[in-house]
Amino acid sequence: MEKIIVLIGAPGAGKGTQARLLEERRGIPQISTGDMFREMKTLDTPLAKEVQEIMASGKLISDDITYRIVRERTSKDDTKGSYVLDGYPRTAVQAEQLEELAKEQGKEIIAIEVDVPRDELMKRLTGRRSCPECGEIYNIYSKPPKAEGVCDEHPQTPLSHRADDTEEKVAVRLATYDEQTKPLLEYYANSGRLTKIDGTGDIEGIFKDLEGVLS
Ligand code: AMP
Image (cartoon, rainbow, N blue to C red; front, side, top):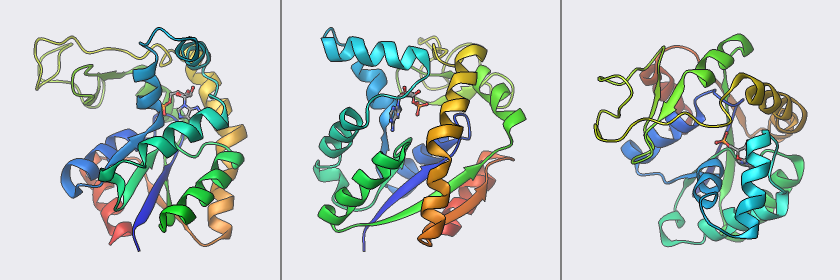
């Protein structure tokens, strides 16, 4: 059966980095709700304005809006097979909505927790930079680009620092994770669909563990 691979972990746990690798190396499409909302933010519509304000606060967009974009995105041809969700679901309601979607699509859900201790997350997030051109993720402490401030593949493009990766916003995002998303770990564990991997250490090692879970 085709799979919906759900990556769960606090902001900064490395879900995006690992999901990108799954897409690049295994051809499993990465569906990131955060990326989709960031793209939407640039539009000049009332909904885009609302999304922009909520994201800037570190809180979550409504379950129904989020479900709508996930549904629409996963109705495209490239998601006929397995796909990976990075940053979705994040609430109990979203988890229920995803059950419905999985049923409709005839797919099985497997959840993988990417576990990183709290004290490391803040450093990862405040040091995180990304390429606006290709989305590659760097970190000024642990994964710096070859030349300071620019992408290895797009040296003309200055790396950007997410507006919600400041200490103050990160604190709100971590609290939101604890309150709303963490309970999903128990939900998936109770139905025997959760595997935990260690999200510390080098990116390649973590990817190996992830592949191990999927094989
Ligand atoms: P991320 O890039 O996954 O850290 O997401 C950035 C922001 O996008 C979050 O802080 C939320 O405001 C919004 N967002 C992303 N995914 C979701 C989701 N599943 N539900 C609600 N809001 C989300």
